[in-house]
Length: 94
Image 1 (cartoon, rainbow, N blue to C red):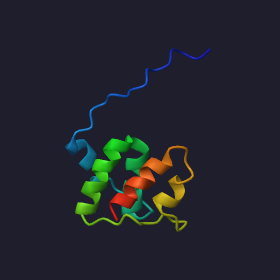
Image 2: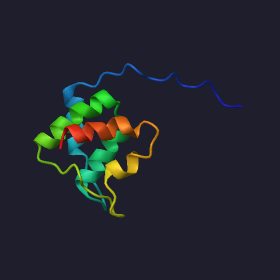
Image 3: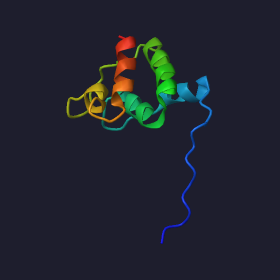
């Protein structure tokens, strides 16, 4: 039998410094901009990711960076259940 489940955290604070910290992630074996975008997508809520994209583009990073298979983050997540919300944010930052 599994132990007690952890409560879902939905009100976690993401201040600007925490959001910006994703820009400092290091990539190993893949494009650094793709890596950072993917990690931010996986770790942030839509509102936090929107703020992240502002910092990302201000830093001159590439929104269309590709993984080792030639895919952008956007082409991957457009198939995800809630990916459209994130893809729409990308369109606002082009």
